[in-house]
Amino acid sequence: MADYDSGTCSIARTAQILGDRWSVLVVRDLFNGVRRFDALQQHLGVARDVLTKRLALLVDEGLVAKRPYRPEGERARHEYVLTPAGRDLRTVMVALMDWGDTHRPGQDGPPMSLRHRDCGAEIHAHLTCAAGHEIDSTTRAELVALPGARLAG
Amino acid sequence: MADYDSGTCSIARTAQILGDRWSVLVVRDLFNGVRRFDALQQHLGVARDVLTKRLALLVDEGLVAKRPYRPEGERARHEYVLTPAGRDLRTVMVALMDWGDTHRPGQDGPPMSLRHRDCGAEIHAHLTCAAGHEIDSTTRAELVALPGARLAG
DNA sequence: CCATCTGGGTATGGAATCCAAACCCAGCGC
DNA sequence: GCGCTGGGTTTGGATTCCATACCCAGATGG
Image (cartoon, each protein chain N blue to C red):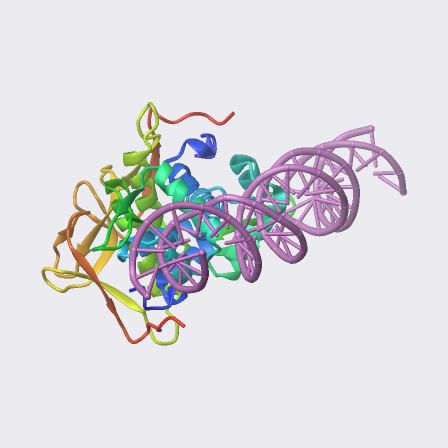
């Protein structure tokens, strides 16, 4: 695959949006229901100007919507919420969380567990092929170039 | 969840390793069989010193092993290969790729397809709960704090 | 009306990173 | 010995990061 252009890959395109220390954590907090600038800033401990830039980028890329909202009898504020495209990152988030739980558990075990609200069972990410076979980390897979690929140059 | 320490989360711990523009792409190339420093450097277009640092970090974190190897009759070289922990990132990689294929497809459609070698069917990442229910992006889920969690301070 | 508080930012300046390009070193082939 | 190649390290300038300080608009209080 080294013959194909590195930047034309979907992983590269996604990494261009999420590929810095904060974006992933911002998205995580948005999943967890944090919506306001100040709350994000304090919870993450990120510098304010960096958070401004990250949020602007995520809005630009269509993962986050910035909406005005007015709590009862207070003045108008902004809130940041995930768009459907942003919510589609849940699989990525859970995959990251699963990896961390397995390989960087901390002394007291995993800190959080994501549960299916209807049945209470834990949610995890995994791979299957379209024919229904489970793919574990030892299963052989192969990458096939499609018309959308471009040769490196 | 905003009451819990942001850094104690498994997503944060994983993002600390993968959270920059290059690490994810390095891991991707290693998955795709690129093993040598120069090949990585040229394919990714990353500055050499940055690649040196990223690889050192990935080795440090146990995702990558640096091994000497001697091709027939040539002198000894190094190669970089994923460890089992590194290979466990496949779910993350596929989830990133799936998101990019869906939301950043490019004009000519997805550039690559990952296939199960045994049956040829496409591989994708998805979420299920331990009870076997499929979780899509509209399914309600809840995050439960475990003993490993820490309150923010 | 004036002062104050609060959310959501900008502005500023120093530290850390990134990048490209140059340089270095060891082993081989000649 | 002389150059070529893989795998780096060095260097200097451009970005980005971070903490802190500052700013502005709309309540709120007097």
